Image (cartoon, rainbow, N blue to C red; front, top):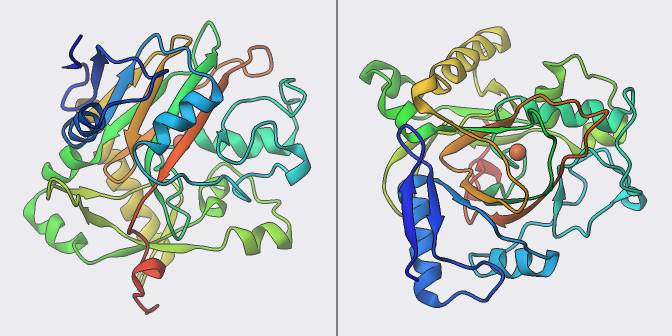
Length: 298
Ligand SMILES: [Fe+2]
């Protein structure tokens, strides 16, 4: 059966049929998935009962893998999954839900803010591939916003104003918005800001997009309150309903998205009661931050 894609979001996001991700993909299938990502930016595959190894094999067929080391508050001996996965579940290493006051839980609540995965890293994320093993019966959706459509809807003056702006991204900035500020000195060092261009051009399609995330806590050369207000307004613009697709998870869904031109957020659920066992494998970007491109600090 040939692979078919059907748009399910307002201006992006498609469901894919006719492919079995538990099996190695042909070069034609891989090319079709890259082309689908270029067009839709979010692809949804239902009924894919993947093992860890199968999820990794599919991810590796699309590019180099990001290792999730030092990006959460889990200590190395508290990892539930190998570092080839980002553990975005609400579970500790014994597969028990986090207690209400657990700071790892409170930190993870930051995933409910709009963001692009790993925008706080020198090498950010290209594709995220999230697989659902166990989901709550209510809530816990993932919402996606199309940053290409959001950019294209800006007026020309704003496009000119933001063209060369550079933002500073850190997980400290996103958590501060939620009142989570009790970082240790070691965490503050580990989470120090990385600079990212606000406007990015997609290398395959040439489409421009706004590269936004709640991790952005400043614009280089701007006073902080002015920058934060400006970024808040931009995120508000970019996440209007006409740019948003909501994914309601089923077990064995695999959803992948292009972090270079989308944002996403998890929605609320009763995480003290329900296990939300979802795990993410991530393809590295090849270019991204100013640090990586060798652009000197202002
Ligand atoms: Fe995320």
